[in-house]
Length: 374
Ligand code: 3PG
Ligand code: MG
Image (cartoon, rainbow, N blue to C red; front, side):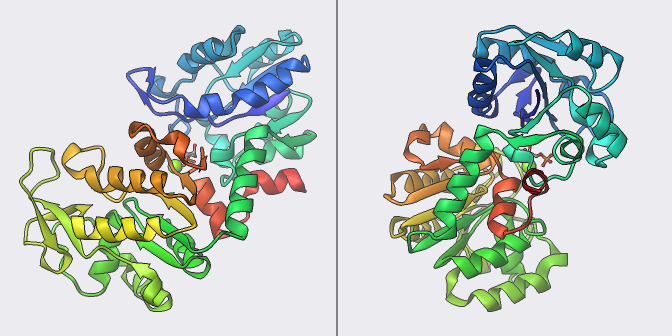
């Protein structure tokens, strides 16, 4: 069995900071073990861009997986090649082997067919359970499925069920909250959410671009001038549905030691930058969320890794968890805010995919899924 998972977990100094994605793959691994499969597992970690980099090695993840599964997990320091072949060959029924980071090979992200064929040679059946990576047409998520009989794993099945059931015909009002730094990679989903929701709340760096596009001086705030014209079009289409911040926490430096103050978004002082939504915006966002029957959230509304700018995101997480709505949260940062607040069990579905859940919502074809259905 060749199993693709998404073990792209946050790491710090060789230690796993959050193993949610590894745990999320356990049902499929257990399912296969119960049926006495021998399992060759592959994943990417980070964006090493085709170069071998120790900090992106999957070796520490093999050790952690072994603890979680309670069975020995072998590790081989290459993705394809003679060592990987030998180790895969030697694998007996009920045994597990983890290959080195697929992205140490430049062929992976190019979806190179020769690389995909070599990877396929390590198994007889391909199972993709890497929901977080289904929006990528890479060799290990798409190419390989052209060479082996293929199926989706249990995590993908569950994610798709939630996203489809809750969001295709959502209980209304359906409110979406989008944050994060950039709008350039979220324009498609903003357009789709405007059509599908009753209210779209936007915070984080991406809100600055919408405000600046309307002529507001955002001073030192992060903005994307290349996206102003599309931002204006979206504002026009959205009308009343779009809720942008009306006030903000601004700082005179990008630092936890910076001086801060709350200002109306029209009044960002020269030399200052927006790093969180303000209390008035938070209150209005909380009100929208409290009245919703379905909430989808992706992306922090401020720089929540820095304590002085965490309030908007953490309070929003609480409001979403406490609402009686069907709540779906996607994206590493939003999910980690939910977990930090100890609210994970109050969310209907915490997705393991950020970009993937957005691509799904946007209605884009997901190459990693499409190839399994073909
Ligand atoms: C993610 O973390 O969003 C997935 O693992 C995909 O990673 P990528 O954005 O580097 O392709
Ligand atoms: Mg990502």
